[in-house]
Image 1 (cartoon, rainbow, N blue to C red):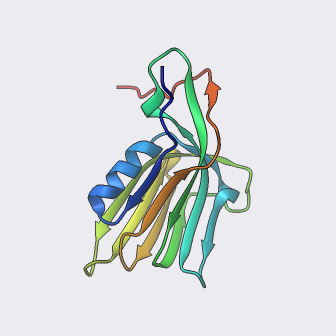
Image 2: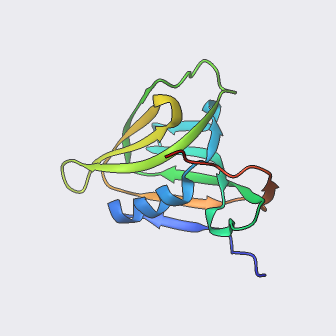
Length: 144
């Protein structure tokens, strides 16, 4: 069985961002792994991504991944404990709400009701796997 190549995805519109969102569903990070570079207008986050594209057996895989957004004008967060940088957060979805074209807001929604909202000039995102995958005994489950 061949191993899928590391993901390298770019997003320049809402449809592209949906693909990145699907790849990142159930990724986990620490609050301290969220970083806003106001001068560089970049927002980055390092995550442990569940490799849905490699799932299929009893054991799944995770991989370290980096997600970066460019052209970021402002960042707001809600219900994330920034004073607890080791707190683990689970990413549920990444979405785009259009504003003045081509800009708008990108929302990173986390389990437990936390979110980060990025005000952006345009959609400019990149996702890249940055480590070899490792086995995980638990596959994220979604109750109905």
